[in-house]
Length: 162
Image (tube, rainbow, N blue to C red; front, top):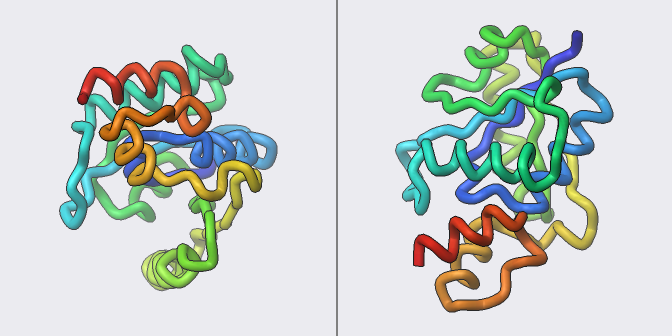
């Protein structure tokens, strides 16, 4: 069984992330969607809230196959997570050229830390490439319509936050 890890903050998960998840499931038998608490970032949602949002979006709203997706929290190196789940691939989403430099450096560091781990870059569909969690939060805070960017349960969580 081929397993991949899709790490991220998912604060909150968007249709861009979901596109990457769906594409990953076409390639891999199992996907571990892993949210972290990066000490260099400020989060709008707690880890538990993000886990709930991810699970509700994937399993309640979209009815994706629970047996193919595991949603977890982690606070280790991603390569250590790969070892734990016997994954040889890290999935990273790309939206724009501006993402590439950071993602390229991250992939290079992971490769230096464990040469057996590959990073695979996937792009979301064109209509979702502009979506970022940051913009979704800003639009929601200003009472804008975010229905085209996140699932129904995520809309509800964002509205409850404001």
